[in-house]
Amino acid sequence: MSCLITMGLAKMDDLSDELKQWLSTRQRLLKCSAAFRDDGGHIMLRREVYDPEELMEPLRSEAQEYFANKSNL
Figure (cartoon, rainbow, N blue to C red):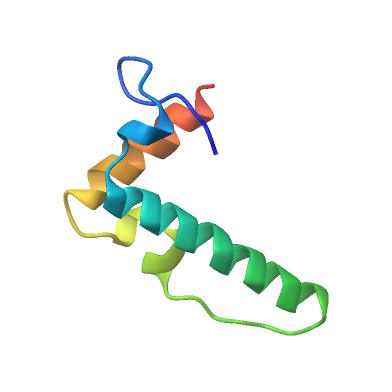
C-alpha cells in the first residue's frame, strides 16, 4: 500500500505504527464483512474499526488527514 500524504510527499513509511496497524485491521475486517455479505450473512463492526471519527486523538487527526489527502490523489 503506497500513497502520498500530508503537506509534503510523505510515504506510507512515514505514518505512525499505530495508524498503519489500524489501517491494516480496518482493511482486513471490511473485506471479511464484505465476504460475509456476499454469502448472505452479516457481521456488525464497531464504528471505531472503520470510522476515523470514532478514534481517540492523536490517531483520529492522523487518520482524518490520511483519508483527506488520499481522496485528493
